[in-house]
Length: 143
Image (tube, rainbow, N blue to C red):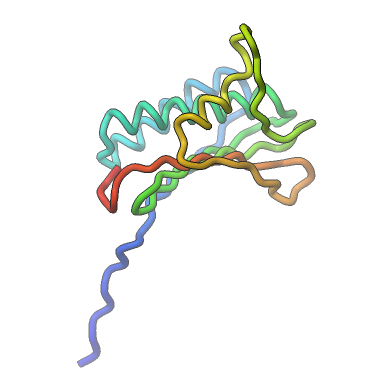
């Protein structure tokens, strides 16, 4: 008798959604992310952090690119939760700016403070890019 295949322990949960690149989509993205994390059994602390990072990354894509739509993806690994927002391109890549007393422009500073790592990569389609952040959430435990 052949041995049964063992379940994978590195399984990844993934959820992605697409929204118009409008300011009203920021709140919708935050709600969709929070609802998914509730379904995954994630606690309120990680949900709040993810909601903030999603808000900042989607806002960045809406405000600083010429996109008609954005795609947001949540991907849970054993030790990290990755948030990625893909846009359709814009004039410049993401950058942390020192805004002084201004309220705008602090999004990536917030992401940098909350994430264990973050970055951006071109998708190969013109100036489109994906900006991502990873959050630590536990050693193999559900988020």
